[in-house]
Image (cartoon, rainbow, N blue to C red; front, side, top):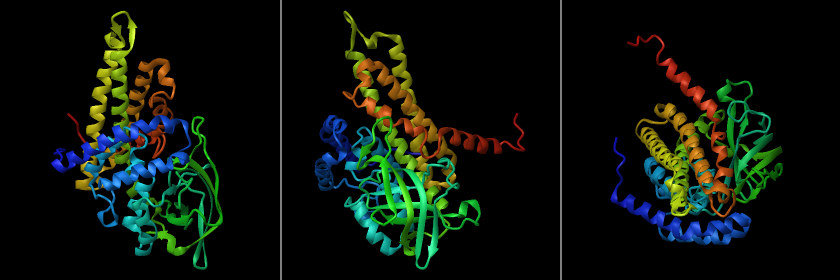
Length: 401
């Protein structure tokens, strides 16, 4: 198993790293104190620069304007861009658009691809993914109340969704809704494209997350579908394949998330180490002279490296053996990397003391917004139970000496 990268890929990563450091990180203080909508012209300017550098949409198909990188390569890109909260958005590979692009590319009709996929890859529009429901367990995607009932040539959608990320300003949603309540649990739901200007698509609010409701891309919406009527041609893939499509979407998506989390780890680890060697605590002594700080730094360095290798191994497995063969690894990295990130962020904040609680550094932003990493895409506990059951099944009937 070889994770070495080509000279071309090294150049790409070097260019991205330099851009993040010179163009994006300096924007962060302004981003932390203003609405996202007020910064859209600046973001558009940076996106234009990225396109001119031919670094736009790294993981998206070449035939639609992306770079066409494979999963391992994009994992490395995700690590590089993850160091800034603006990285993915400015380079055109942000969630939930990235996952929606994968779905449209794999399951979309020619008409759907021209109408929605091409402008989405190009960055002309944004989208959202509407699956999680207010009264249903988000960790169990076969339990859905939202329905899509056929009437004539249309689907009529009714339901109540929340945590529909980035719905504010999106042009369309991909909605997961029950189309056949009498089918087997894994064949009841379908995915349907719903333009956000459709009557009955009601954006109730942007949900405050730890006191911050956000706006535009950086937001999580509550959506009420009330007799929302769309043509049946908006169905993605075969009817009843919503769960299957969701699994296809979530596997590679976790590589993007996990390597982004590694990028966050790298960023806050650098801040922690710099703080340790510069923060004077007594004449001639800095925080770095304390063994407890040295122990934290050593542990964080080891855990970041271990988590990184786990994710790259999983990406390699998906690329070479398919998502099914990587199912166990996908669950392992999800809770392993999320918890590693939480530990590194928490210790970086602790080393910064009172400064770490403020928005004078990026640490408090990551602390607020990345706590959800242990919840979305399936809570850690669900993944642990699932992995443990699969592991234990392998021992049934075995003799171990």
